[in-house]
View (cartoon, rainbow, N blue to C red):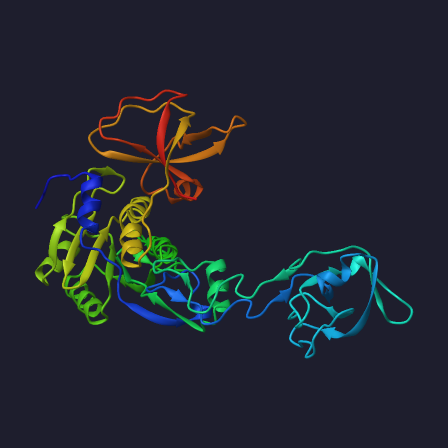
Length: 404
């Protein structure tokens, strides 16, 4: 079985064609960081609820200190959480602290460094202050019923703080996509094992799970399955029963004698959309649907799996999770020559640096074998080489995809 190589852009469009944010759930405020608001929220209180002092000093009437120096009677104290219950009259003042409610009758705050405490307990003003100085008006930040965070907001530290201040103990958020990750192959062993002849340590699932988590997904490790049709069919049935949003397989999605994923999954009802992409690394990438579950078959080579996860799994997760999908593609100055490209779009591992002039420079690693995960780990960018791109010389401008 074979098929045409489809362009990367077309494959991504087909992958994302009907991807939309999943349903919502309500989570505690402490669990909302990094999530996306499913509905906008309004303030449940006014902040500050009353006029409060912005500084440590003395609550006074502006008219009483207009002709400073002026002596005032100290009649009490207003600490945060302990408002002064009386009223400031003519010639009177109340000691006040930052965040304290401004007592009735007072209309300004005199800084403590602008006042002198007299021996008889009275306070002398050393300069005048206009009405309203050093006072935070009620509702300065927000008022009850006011919209504070719209739907679609990514809950970062600032948004989390605002939601808490608006008196929300929990928030409605878009559900995280549940991503099952299944490694395939008789040759695979878990890290910490002692490989026998022809065996290797499985690594892809850890990198893909981390990427899925960064993109807002909930990765679920489905372990390693041997190259046996019955075992693959059983794992697929379990993934359906677990109501996964996405099933990611690693390896076995091509059509070699031991590549059974596509064969078994189609036999179990998967509607195959595509499985060959005009890209390097990562040509044998499979996408299909089984009911509501999307199935993404990534290549077995570690670098191929990670590059395909960046280009396809990440945007799918971001769309299902309600996030904005935006790849960081920027121009950079090439620091090493590159030969002309063939018909496949090439993603070349590379390292960048910023020159003193401010220009971003990029250097491709000399060896690009798709099994070399060490090179990928050192890369902070991928140079994007379009199909049939001509050779590029040092100093040419190329497009890169930033990774870090």
